Image (cartoon, rainbow, N blue to C red; front, side, top):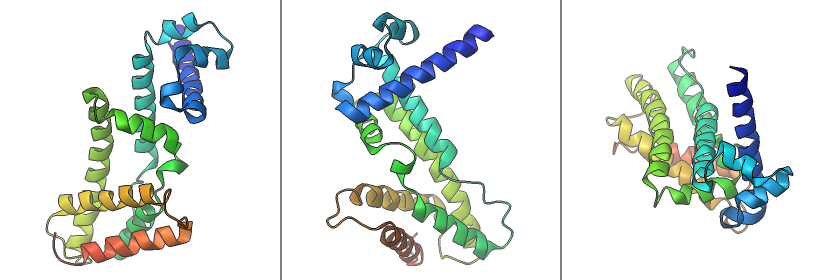
Length: 200
């Protein structure tokens, strides 16, 4: 039991250094040798815990997905008033910024791997399925309370995520950069307008 716990801690330490190397040198520049140098250990130690760089990448993907999953959406079921509950959902969704959870350099480096590696794609699908499911429940709840005219909560949830993804990407290349308050207001107004148009 103690050995397993120590191994888990060591793996997390290695992934933490891998994460920092990606931030500094990009995904392509990250190597087992550079991570070992940063940790001041022999590369064989990293190979002991992760047989290849690909195995280390999958460990990092798991870390990213698990971190996002635990930070994204709280449980709103304790809020009894439907209007207050829906307002809370909109507030949370409009304030989600991926880079406050994980560095964009790391996230997008790993995200692009999902376009060519099925196992990475599956892990990101798990992340988004969880988010769709949570939003679908909240949209259905708001619709049943007649707060929004939505008949297809799942499609509406997918569209909300599309808005979230788009604005999270755009805010980093917008010129001039979007202020946080403007970004949140734009996000909320866009979602409200979309869901009240009666097309879902």
